[in-house]
Amino acid sequence: MRLPIAYNIRNLAVRRATALMTAGGIALTVAVLLASLALVNGLRSTFESTGNPLNLLVLRKGSTSELSSAMTRETFQDLVFNPGIERSSRSGWPMASLEMVTTVRLAAIDNPRGMNVTVRGLLPVGIDLRDIRLQEGRWFESGRREVVVGQAIARRCPDAHTGGVVRFGKREWRVSGVMDGGRSAVNNEIFGDLNQVSSDFNRVQQLSSVLLRARDAATVPALTDSLNDDKRLNAFAQTERDYYERQTSAGNPIRMLGLFVSVIMAIGSGITATNTMYAAVDRRTREIGTLRVLGFSRGSILLSFMLESVLLALVGGILGCGLVLPLNGLSTAVGNFVTMSDVAVNFRVGPGVLFVGIAYSVLLGIVGGSLPARRAARKEILTALREV
Image (cartoon, rainbow, N blue to C red):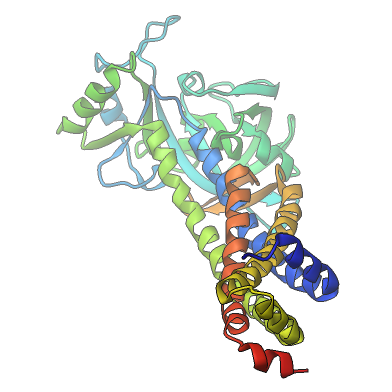
């Protein structure tokens, strides 16, 4: 014979002050874990939304990022006329952009120490290769010291607005417009004319990478192999999406920190839940004896106390999910350890994150209630009835 769930709910209601404090501790533990997971989800969403499936990014062989790559103009001329590269319908020229990438420090509204920003010098075709639109202003003009900033930078940098002036490199740059890259990492970059940017950083010959577009999806593997096998180039080609997906490793420190803090808090919450259930067992000793007299088995009592602990933790899990939900969509800055720049990401609290929170709270309930439930089930009938 099993005890009804209503019995456990009634006991939690009787001990509501203690139960709520225990549930609150579990809620905070769950909230910390889910906040870190939501931030990592936002970072992953940003990088996975970046890149066209037909675009290939070509780096110097052995380089792990555009920042550490070195691509010369001669190499660009050797690869740009590969027959697998798409040609522009307007000019007939290959859709390939030689680019230079570096990181600069700009003032930030939300950080007195400033922020690291990726500056990209590129050819005009580089804009056509990316899924971006102009939010305001106009695109930079070739041969002029003008830049277009991503909308995330425009929000954080006080000078990065249309008509404003930002200073990096040797001189000042006029902001001609603000671009919108959707959810992609482009929102965290500054675009400028390749020749102007490379000259400003004394890198006229030693540039960073080449972004190009294959003629169609079937051409992508063959073009990749062709570029990688060409001994003259000493280059490594990969799809643009693969490159940015690898940058999701930037979220690993956040995930590990969140797990570490939540585990430490989980130990405290688990001990609290255990003490709460031990106290419940001690207060209900005669009640346990009476239940045994009425015919309830040890297994039924064990299951009942375990269920009560899980219900208590489940309340905490639901409260923890409720604490994290307001974070959904909020923006914050995260350091990208691949590009050494700041990336603005949005917290993303999806169904998967909430499921992890509920499952984690249930696990805490099982761990915290196992020993008290076993103690309750092992009480002898006569001993339990005699205890006050």
